Every structure is written in C-alpha cells, then in structure tokens.
Image 1 (cartoon, rainbow, N blue to C red):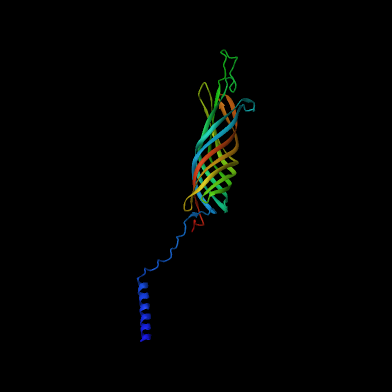
Image 2: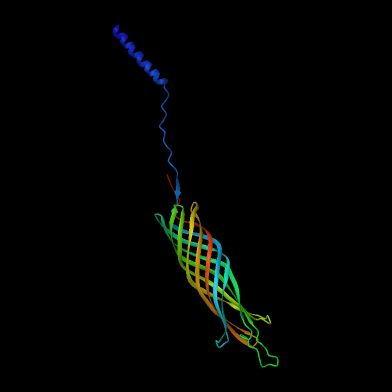
Length: 279
C-alpha cells in the first residue's frame, strides 16, 4: 500500500505541473529590428547627354579705320559694343568618378541671338573732301559708319574636374577650347544726304578658349540638373568694307576682339549603371 500511495502522489504532481504550464501565456517571438534606410548613392561614371538654356553678356571691342583705296588713313576710332542675348543648345560628355572626385570631358554647341551695333563719325571735309575753290566753297560732308556684329553660334570642348559636396551634388571647374562664328556688317552714309551704302556681312569662324564653373545635382533616377557660368574668348575678327559715296571711294577696316559671359541652366541624362540603394 505504501508503494501504491507514493506512485499515485507522483502521478498527481506531474499532472498538476502540466496543467499549470498549459495555463501560462505563449512566449512572444524575438523582435528583429528593421534595417536602417540609407539614401540611394549615385554613380557619376558614365556617358551623358542633355540640353541647356541661358543668357549671355557678350562684348566686341574694336578699332575701325577709314582709308582711301591707296591705304591712307583718313579717320580712325575705337569703341565697344554689347552683344547680349539668349543662348541655347545641347551638350554631351563622359564622367569618371574616383571616390569623391569626378573627372570628365564635355562638348557643346550653342545657337545665339547675341548682337549689337555702334557708330563712328568721320568729321566734315575728312573722309569726303569738298572743293574750297568753287564759287561757293564746298565742304565735304561728315560720314557716319554703323558697325553691326552678331555671334551666330559657338561651341566648346572642355575638361571638367569636380568634388562631391554630397554623393548627389557635384561642384566643378571647367575649361578648354572655344570656337564660333561672328557676323560683321556695316552701313556707311554721308550725314547730309542720308543716302547710305549697306555693305554685305563678313562671316568669321574663330577659335579661342573658355573657363568656368558650375554645380550639378541629381534630381531623379539618372537625371541631373546644373547651373553653369562660362567665360568665352573668341579672339579677334577683322575685315574690310569697300564702298563708293558719290565719286569718293572709301575702305573701312575693322578689328574686333569678341568675348562672352554666359550663365545657363541645363539638364542631363546619364546612361549606364543604375542608382544603387544601400541598406
């Protein structure tokens, strides 16, 4: 009996422990922290193409000399003209990213409506000589000349070097070759008669240099936007205009140095590798 009593007590104890365990709440699963989000990283390496639009403050600084056909200088003067207007075009290039540095090559072509005009006045009896021996002494009239110039188009081929202010914002400097076409024309007239001689334009394609800086940032996906300043020096353009006023043959010779200050905004699409997301 004693052994039977001990067995019954042990069985009851086991049953009570199991029932108590069944009444306890289930243990909650372990909490796993979600990975922290990191802003996507843009890979600047690759080929890109885009467009731009802006405004330009150009200048033509020139010297004009009016001569007779033999080359004797009758009048000379210096002046400068503002060649201001809208510029727009396209660009393409390639970037190499090395850690926080970006190196690149870029070419662009621009159309413009930059133009300006300034005038000279050759005094009386200078470019056209009157006849002082006539019954009523005749004085030669003053002669006015208006020199008009226009930058038809220009382009650049430049290197770029920049540093990443953030992974998605690039600060850069740029410089290299510039080239473009300048159209020059003249209108020459005696002041007294107002009958003018309009001389056909001379087109000059020049090669010079450019230097500038800008900021470019990622706006969405593989798209970037930029704001850029360029100084362009197209060197000197020169030419001669020959005309006849009455019976007097005149030749106007000009030499102009053409420079430009350009501020433009642009947008690019980069081909190749996608934006990489980090977690």
